[in-house]
Image (cartoon, rainbow, N blue to C red; front, top):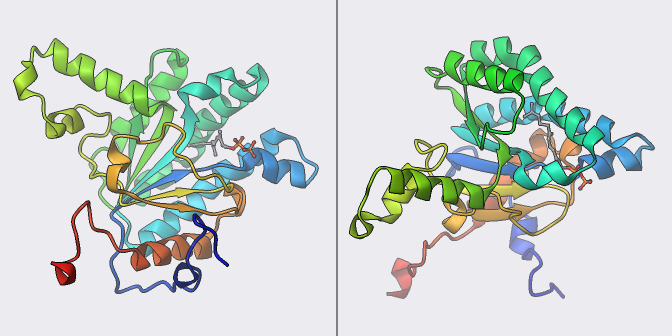
Length: 252
Ligand code: FPP
């Protein structure tokens, strides 16, 4: 018997429909790199390397499907608490990723955005991130928003600070105004949040923007999350009944 929180049989059978509704913005919590590596008797760093490579595969498939924006959770404000070696390795991967992939990303029409705080990041990496964002700003095939040194609560705090600095009076504070002061304010709210690695939580990812996002969790570890897995997630999304707090017309 399906448990209270398990996926319904209908979702397990969901098939992807290329002419169905396609999520515009998809957020991905790329979890399970460490377990993927351990399962192969490899160091965690190997899992992060494989995870970094996987972003390319999923991004290409996202373009194929017609998704217009991907936000990937690359490094959270809480990840600084990991062992120093692992933190350094993740920093190097991001830097290397930009150096190795920027030409191709730009050529493919990928617009790169960064969500998160640059303060606390090494000056050279700050420069690389700013450079990647500036170079690709006019691209329009897909937006790759990299949540790096990112925390959803920190993002809301930063928005509040910006609003207060602008001298906005309390009566003028609206949900729209807060949304406009978030890091990637020109992106629509995510329609779908995917979490690999089997957990069912947001872990401080896009907590404001995900208010009405559909949540999809798969036990697949991030490095193994391939094209078919992305299509499966979209298929499940297509079978969801999104009501945004309202009721269905048929039930009026
Ligand atoms: C979670 O796996 C993954 C991370 C904390 C980091 C994800 C980062 C990348 C894939 C690199 C990003 C690079 C670029 C260029 C954007 P985990 O270590 O928590 O795995 P575990 O839960 O199995 O231990």
